[in-house]
Image 1 (cartoon, rainbow, N blue to C red):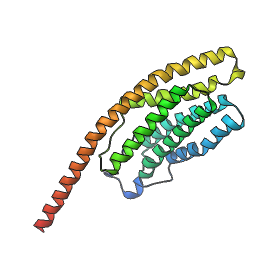
Image 2 (cartoon, rainbow, N blue to C red; image 1 turned 60 degrees about the horizontal axis):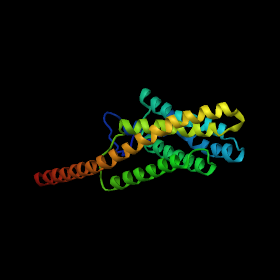
Image 3 (cartoon, rainbow, N blue to C red; image 1 turned 60 degrees about the vertical axis):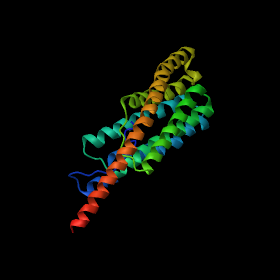
Image 4 (cartoon, helix red, strand yellow; image 1 turned 120 degrees about the vertical axis):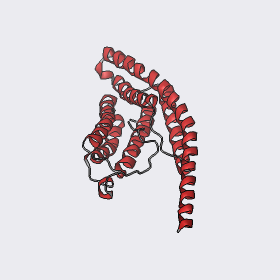
Length: 226
């Protein structure tokens, strides 16, 4: 998902667009995000209700792919909105956390992999919320973060598909190897990116506070002139 990190900290900045345009809710990208959210119970039903990790993995992979699709549509057809910039990352986080916890319960993926990704996600999200509340400026996702998220969100569906024993031993081995080929670099990239976010977050916090101080000083100076 993860793309589900592309706006770690969001500050509305509108240049050349009217409020009606950026505050739209009924857009195609937002509809896709809503469908992703509504499909989460279906994913859980397939995994636990139908005991079909293969189909659950296919659905999870499809949902992860649609995150790229809605981002592309938003940029390509000028359908970005303030609501979408808030709603899309929230859906991504819900899907990621629910997916990881479900995989841990099902035992489809190695516990070390699922636990590392989940702990990393909780720590980074908590850090972002903290510095945002303290006035940090916006932080963009790093290249390492994008690669890590892409690999991890490919690994989880692959582990689920590999757990579908009815596919046969050959398919199980192939999908397991493919999952590990994504999981190992995915964890490395994600942990490295987490370190970057903690370092950059401190810088963003200082810059955000400085910007507010300068704006306040400028406002006071303007008031004195009046």
